Length: 495
Image 1 (tube, rainbow, N blue to C red):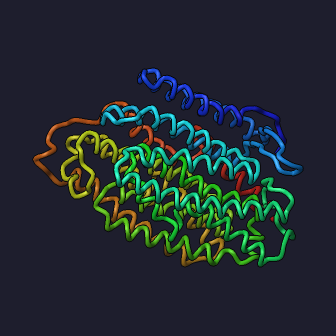
Image 2: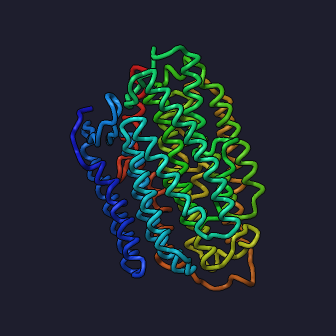
Image 3: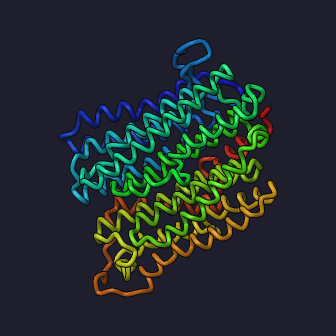
């Protein structure tokens, strides 16, 4: 691809940082604060979208910020993989911004200024992760995201929330230390951390050392990616407000973990080297166990957000599975699942929040008949549930289809069986929710009374996106083109 010097990637990061400052300054003027939040979300998405035509014609907008030492610099680059993540996150942030206003107003939550400012910093860090041109830049934004999310996790300031925050920091900061060791070791043996399609580490050290480095990367990113047994911080963090749960699960935090694994496999090691050093069996075992165990645990949860949390843990490992199977179709399915899971899971969490605000219900066993009161909201939940179970024509079907093809291409038929089994388990823990809401009755819910439009509109738009990506995966944002180019460059790289 042709390099194009552009301040676009930097501007996409900076707009949220500026907004965070303005949000703090306008704390006593809620309408101004919320206006800044919406404007920043729209501007960020617009800037990211403006980079897309350049990337589609083969150019790579990038900017060097400054050099720390010879060969080590902070730099930003909008390549197809980064554009995929940035487009998905920035668009979903627009929906989350509107939804957050409706949610926070509906519950009269405290410290809303801190909430919206922290949200803005989180999105700035997320775009920095997407557009990082090298390991050091990725690491710095990755850690900023960890710190900026903490005030959101502990937002309610209850003993349960503070305990969840401590657990969140213990896990993610420890993962950050492991990741820093992996980055430093890589730069030491290779002399550079610049991302290269197909990787740059072949011949930099013996296979034993490279396997150790890979495992450090996998553990460091795997904490945020909630790969078992590194996952338990994520269910605990469900004590946070529901828009934060949406941020954690669909937009930024956990997706940063699986995105980091994709970067390392495709742009640091390369698929060939990952296979040669013997990293695939252990990684496959961990993600396979995560998919199965998390699905079984989801079946046991009566709390709606906890059920969705364990669902997320399993679906994140679909993405990692696609990456570590090292087959073109598996990569296509895994990367597409970053987008499709984001749209479907944010729909489900938005619905959970709307139910809590409007009906004050948190448990699946209390949902009987709620479909009469909130039919549009529960219909969106049903649609996204079909997609997560892998049924056409919702987006999840396509990502799972390509993942299944990838298992055949790589000869891993065990993972094909696992995909089919987990699809049945997805249906088992998700389908009872709309079934109870629509087919059972309760004296409690008898009249139509939907969520506020600021919450309902994002729910319906996210649900519509889940359907659109299944019917026309390249519509609007050319996600499929970006994925195809990423997979082609990685599989055709030097490894």
